[in-house]
Length: 218
Length: 218
DNA sequence: TTTAAAAGTTACAAATAAGTTACATTATAA
DNA sequence: TTATAATGTAACTTATTTGTAACTTTTAAA
Image (cartoon, rainbow over all chains, first blue to last red; front, side, top):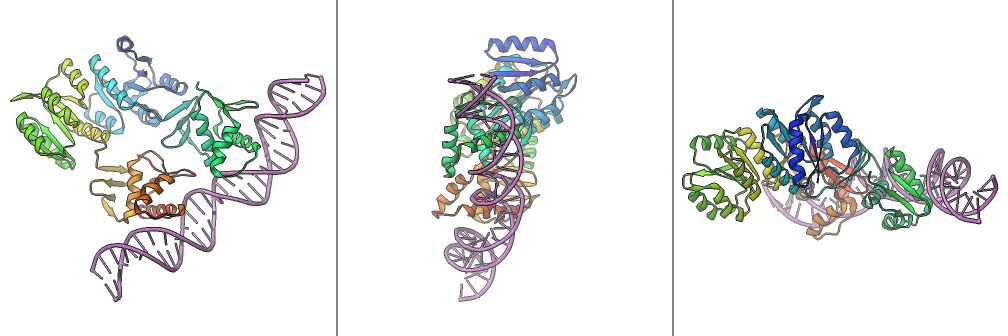
């Protein structure tokens, strides 16, 4: 389980690193919102965020609202801000839990465990700056929605479902055009890939000549 | 929504009764574990319990473990007991949340709402200016009731139950027209969506071309 | 290095899905 | 009964999507 701790207090970071390590969590900490933002852009598999509100370069609540919420990552607020208004607002916005400092590490751990249990399945696949929300059937580039045509989306879905695996041109022909009933030229795939890549503006799709295409994690 | 408050402090009872009533919850309070036990035996439809630990005739935590947990009713502990050990134990046992006294009523309310939502027991879903009361099966636009035909309502219900998720045209066909027994043209869905949108006068329904429709929160 | 095949581009006409409107049929209520 | 609403279909409109052809570039093997 990968947990991202966004927090600037070094004592807390040190304590939590130790406690989470002992509980077999992989805890990564970032001391500014900007660093957290960069980390989120590069890493797809983050299962939970522990977030402080008072950060040196901004307000964690706004960061949650603008970025984290859209990425759909469960978040526990851990902060000295104890105002009823902020607590209610955070929880209402979508925070999974809200703990005020000073806090008990054991309590945080058990609350983390509960949140992770509630969210055991994730429907979002992230590769580089592109994320694919399977529930919504929407693809985002840095939180910005991209538009695809039905068949483009189906091809992308196929590639995302087979992450790190080659999807052969034949499989694409079968799975996509078997449904439409159309008997389609092999070149059509090439054209679709061109269109998809153009819209993605991101080279996440690798061509394997003579075989097919593949999307790699990281 | 039926909530059972197990608590002996009359000031708290009075305050919560008022606050919960204002939020359209039906709050029943019992001042002893024995009375709570009797009430639970007689009433089936209890959606959530708010539980104090220090009760005149026993320990709420034991009561939770022995009775409530077995009945599978979501429970929020609300108690003066602030020991780390008890908090962790309660949450570990299965408590949905744990608040220590003194507490903020608004925070309790928002946590109650979250618990009910997790357990799909929330009866009112609000999206933009449209709210859907599942108990009453009524849809409001800014407190004003909108009228829908039976099938229109079923489609809307399907979309609201799958908030943030695409409902495919096939699923709509299956779930709506499988029941009526009618074998219906795919275009019929389109027409229904047009009618629903016209009545809503609010663009909460997103079309995902080639796939289906979706309602997003916020 | 040459070459042939595969994949990438570009542009365009045909096809289609969804939106829209109107209407006929079937229930339901007064 | 009549009147009212609900349902399903058909015909039409629209913008988008789709598939192909012709051409260019890249790749890998000879």
